[in-house]
Length: 271
Length: 328
Figure: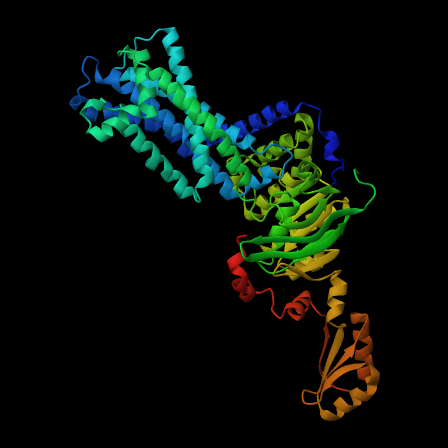
């Protein structure tokens, strides 16, 4: 057995401003989470398979029976499926955080001379990357089933920008859920219990006009509908309203409120 | 070293921690000198893990002070974290990463720089016999391999103080012995090790000093030898064939006889250097033509110590009684 030379690790630390260290820690954590995407079958499936499955089911099973007025169902549906995919992708932070907390690796991170909240940043950034991949896949799948966007470059940039901010907002909420739930099973259920109702009681798959009053009031005023309506306007030119601004306000509001809560929860959990 | 005024690597004073009405730690005091291996010995739920979590800044105490490498765990958690390595009760590894990736990730997070991280990772993998599986995902590792990669992750920054929380719990005997050799090797490199264990044998083999903990209090401390001596000296037990021989034997050893039992025809003799005395006694008995039934050397074990101190052993029953608090 050879022995390692003992040097004080403090001396080996290079001098760097705190904020740069934070960025570098967060980047290491992001790399870790991104490796999880490509190595976990479960995650790969949800990145590529589920969005396509939903697209096909809605387009061909339900699509024929839904009246979307002037625009084709494929064009109507796209924004809904797109936002749903982003929401589910961003929900992975819940599951991944719950797994980390259960496996004890969080204790190791906490005992390192880094700011442990870099772990949150890593999971959230990985969600963004996962959603970017899913986003491209869903656009290609949409084009195959008859989605014909009329958007120009500027509109596409708006769509991408809002998609990123929306994904970030859902990830922040997911982080809170991941820190609150007590088990992995519970973490997996939150996606179904929270995100399914939100995407169904919205303008994702059917126009809201046919819903009963109470549902319709909810559907028309919840953030996902605003995100979908704004994207629909940009992508296929449905009549524009102030949905984009409301969507942006919702997303930024969620981020500003939930990020500090998540960071605080992460600090106090287990203490 | 940063704090030259003292050779104390760890100093704990009147440490208290409660969860509601449940007192987990009820005033713990101890010190560990540099380069020592200290074992916190006690049954499940005694408070061992709580102490480790407080010392590694994962948990804050209600009362009392603790310094690690001269830094207060409450006021200077960052400096404490830079001085320590922690291997928790459950292997804190990332199953989706390979062994090497796990190790390098931690090296970078310790801010060792890319090249230094790579060099140290390679050395540690060699030292802990993990080169062969190093590019496989940890998911495929055996229990012993997991513990070793976990330990490697704690060692990558060459911490001067290492916390090992039940490092061999759940390992097979072979992996356990490998782990013991590694831990012994660490102490030889002047690393201070604080380990917790429920196994007497582990504490006996590894520790320079043992602190026995039960229900949140220190009930004894000392070297393994001191603790065992506190129970009584080593003794030889002789059982002879018949009553005449019994009386003869009593006469033969006279003042050295610790106790005797005529019914069983057995007597105990105090001994200071066990095996050498064993030979001497045997030849003395032979010369006097005493026929013996059995002759055995008895050494107090740490189990005896624990039983004597607490009135219960560290066995499963003890675990059951305190199981309510084990998850803390």
